[in-house]
Amino acid sequence: MKSERDMKEDKRKKEVTRKSKQIDRLSSEMNTCQAIVKPDCSKPKVQKATGIQKALMQLLVKSMTQLSDKTDLDLNDGKLTLENNNLITLSSPHIPVDVQRTVKFATLEFAGFKFSSFAHTGTEYLHHIEQNIIKIKHQLPCLKHLVICEEKYKFTPDDFKAATRAQRKVTTNYSISHLKTSEEVLSSDKFDKPSLVGTSEGKSLASTYLAKNVEDLRIKENITIDVDSELHLTTCCCKDKPCKCFPFCTPVRAYFNARDGFTRKELLHDIKQCKGEAEMSQIDWLINCPTQLLQGDSCASIVSSGDIDAVVLHLFTLSHLY
Image (cartoon, rainbow, N blue to C red; front, top):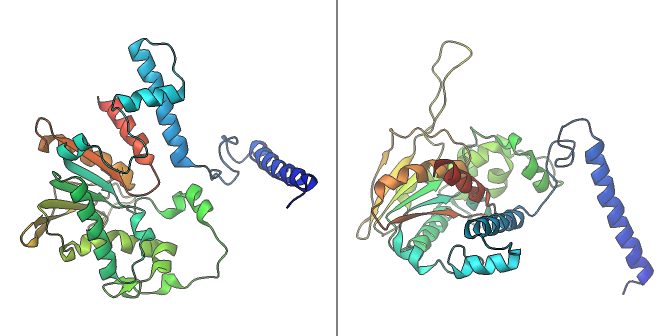
């Protein structure tokens, strides 16, 4: 049991550390947003999911107050009103019934899933994926079309993600993972997670493995699955320098049915995907999906990781277009 004096000293040390970091950021001349980022331009660690959820709640409560000409509601009363009116559902273990019955088209942000898998081989990894797809299909029984959006590391290299990379840094020995061949890193009988997570080559292999082996998914459901990845990436053939080409990726579409499972696959040559971030490519698909929907149908966006940047992107798109 710590004494009161020791507890005060611990509190003082924490306060000194906090103030020192704040002064360090504010006194730096290396960037113009010292109060927000560190001198190396990386963000301080924050609870992003919690913060975005709270900000979203405040925005919705404020909008509801202005539209209804009511007196200002505090966050708790506004949250209760929104939930009672079925405008928002938080911390629910189940998808609302009215959503289950109407969703025909869905997108799935798949960026972080592969790095949380406990698979030891590529076959186990595919099995993990198919189990999750079947789970989604059972949660959304009317779902006919699922688009899986992968991260495209040739568009957005990990070097640009300084904010999250700084949080993931640990002290480790030097690795030779980058010297391994693709078959040694990921194949039907190999799933070298340290190499997949620790090298840009490994991440690119993991993000294209599903599209390359989509026919091996054992899914006996009536569903069409599109895999939006960098497997089929255009290469530049320009003789003029600097190059003026815009690289793009071609998604893969696979068809499944309840009797035979996988039936065939094809390349969607009419789609030229230029969005590197999985959350951003989701928006492209959702903008184009209304042509497939009938009156009373709806679409859903599924985020598989704790990162809910997709919420902000979806709200911006809705406000911009509608």
